[in-house]
Picture 1 (cartoon, rainbow, N blue to C red):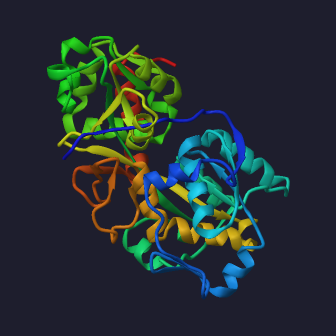
Picture 2: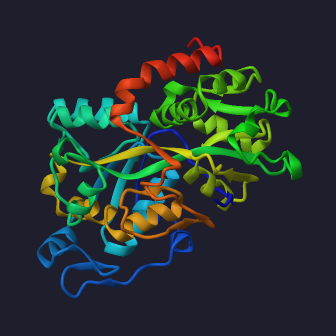
Picture 3: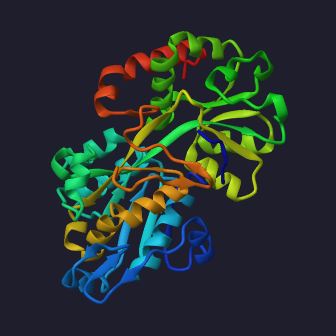
Length: 370
């Protein structure tokens, strides 16, 4: 496996943005050139039908309202690319997944749901939305492939739009030459005492998935040994990332998409994906009761799970949900496939069986009592 450099992440505050006029076209096209697009009979992108003529004609008369728990920049790039390829505008509201869940449930309870599509970073949140009938069953043109890949949940009420891959990164101005860590075991070196940054395990399913991976791969003692080096524990990834880019810490656990964004922005950050592997977590996406009547929202769902939508996610550093796309890369790094044995996905079954134990081991290892 090859190591790569990675790029800029966004704010954690809630904000609303219209896709039209957001990320420059050069930005999204630098990530991945535009595919072939035909609107002669509906919408066909990269040889794959996204919408038939009737659906596409109706969709062009509407826009999409999206609520997202993803990072601001990742979602901004995604909706900009969608608008480029489809001509349909998207307005999105970005907030942490727990706040998103609270807001959407409140709106739905009052009969005032304001969003058509929801993307969250938390499987439990998605399940709660499905159980409360905020999300509706929806079938994309590629449903057979998605079913085969095991990324359709709650009888079709949501899918995993892609996987977030978590590993670690280092500041390449602080660590050079022989100091550069290449494996998970290298993070236990005494030279990194008080120089590693972690996000507390309760901050999101991505951090939980990574800690579960480390325990299952190296044993509970791995976290205990890391804890003896007194790493810095942050409450949010945004603060951790800022500390890494400033050189206040030398190494940080990090999502590949964040690392890609940081490097592309010029930050002195290099991602490491060790041979022993990395963790993966689902990124749920679902159509709401409001969105089921919006043809533009249906096109968004179709596009996100299409070859084009999946390949653009891969270009940002996410692992595609679909296994039929061949080898894909992000910023020079060849991504693992969703079925790669070195890519350990944290499933809902894993979470139900081990979350309490993982959290307890983590808190004990890092003497964290919050």
